[in-house]
Amino acid sequence: MSTLLIEVLKIKNLFRLVRAEMLLVYADFFRRKIVMITYLAWPYMTTTFMLMIGYAVGSPQAFAERVGVEPALFLIVGSYLLFSSMSVVDDIMWRPIFDESVGTLPYIISSPAGVVLHYLSIPIPRFVLSLVLGLTTLFPVLVVLRGLSGVLIGLIVMFISVVSVATFVPLATALGLGLYVAGGENWRAINFLRPLLLILVGVYYPRWLMSLPLYIVSSLIPPAHCVEVVQRIVVGLAEASTITVSLVLALFLGLAYSPGMLRATRAWELRKLREGVKT
Image (tube, rainbow, N blue to C red; front, side, top):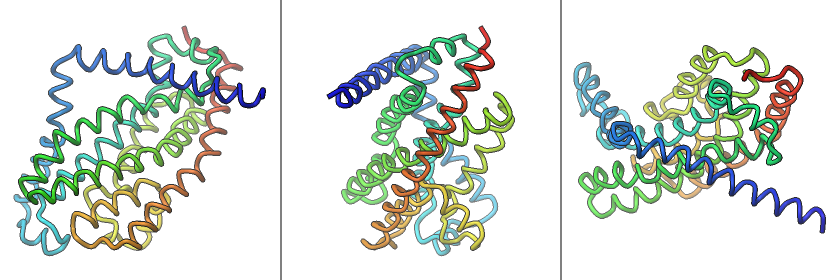
């Protein structure tokens, strides 16, 4: 009975933390209109920029022959996957520095809810926004380029993006807090890690075109498998066995990194309790 009560309390605490995070994120999001406009326009801006560079150095026909799909469709899907994943990961990796700079870290460390639940609650509000972004980004482009079948593709992409982010959270938390434990709250290390993860996830360069060493390294990152599934669906190379194996691998890796996330979180918390936090 006591164990059940503890688990119920954890769930209630998680809901409260998610609610608090939503109030924090959405209040800032809707208060600053320029942030909201930029957020909704970002995938289009990124895709346009990438297309301009691509047209300057090559032809869309060459891209379609090599990748298997027109560049506009491939890049808009990649931009959405990038933004839905990295906005969540950025929130997790930068949060310790943010909390310390604004003075909320002492309250987080002393909270009875625990640091682990706090970090599990951080990505949820941003990810809900990314689903809204999918409706404003993916569906218009997919319907124009693929007709009614684009609606089904959009729903599949959004579903797989949920799996992608869920499996990314343990690794991102373990890496982010592990770096802070090893070297302190150093934004330079995070700035080095982010583009490296971006390359390895393969949102703009299909994994099946990577060299073997790079492909093997990228296989250790859970969302890379989800991104590959989406790209194969868009290109038309997806098979049921390939999708199943890739999604199972992503879920397995997400679970495999969970103990590392717990150890990194506890090590970071113990370090803050031992050294104290800035106020």
